[in-house]
Amino acid sequence: MASASSASSVRVQLVTAPLDLAARQGRFGYGDPCPGHDGLRSPDTGAWAGRTLDEVAAEDPAAVQRWLTDPSYAPPGGESLAALTARVGAHLAGLAPGTHRAVVERAVVRAAVVHALELPAAAFWRLDVRPGTVTALSGRAGRWNLLVGQPE
Image (cartoon, rainbow, N blue to C red):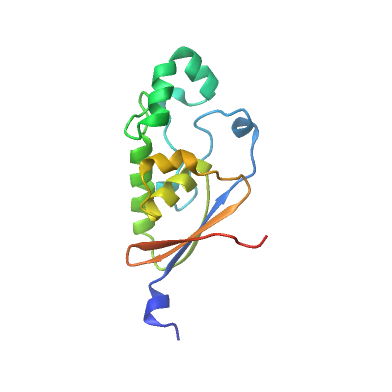
């Protein structure tokens, strides 16, 4: 029989897919929502979707600079990094006890770690997430832990 503490435990395995062509080209707005985990869908990049960061920066360098430095700034018609982190955090908070596995975009992993560890929003851009990896979070009663150093 499981103990009361293990019964209420949540484990989340966030899997990043290997780079596809759109990701290799650095295009925004690729990837479908993970079935059953709509709150972990890719960030909404609005008018920037389907374009590279270089393309957007050539057109509006001030907007790109603001997006990279102001977590509350959203691309036109899109979602801010603060909103992404809040959405991902709400999804994590609503997960039922047990183990969940979701294939997500690397930005979603960053948002999940920022939320789970209560990091400042500026940490988002300081987290390197490799394609084809698993980031594991475990939690109970609103307290999350990050599993690092998983063997291959």
